[in-house]
Length: 94
Image (cartoon, rainbow, N blue to C red):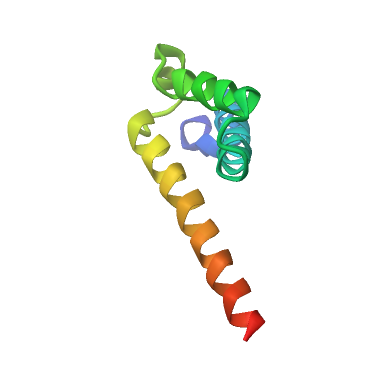
């Protein structure tokens, strides 16, 4: 039954997923900092470094998810969450 091993139980697969999930979390934080403080050089550098990772050969060895797709998706997610938050704050002021 070794051939039926669940890939999610593979320690290398779990490590790869953990690396990617941490990069995603770090990228979200950097994008939110940039949104709040567009000239925050440290946040900009962090975001650019993570984008390089998403475009790297190492990233493509860890996952089959397209790095460019992930970057665009996360940027859109942060943009959308900020606009939703803005609408909620405006509606609470009424």
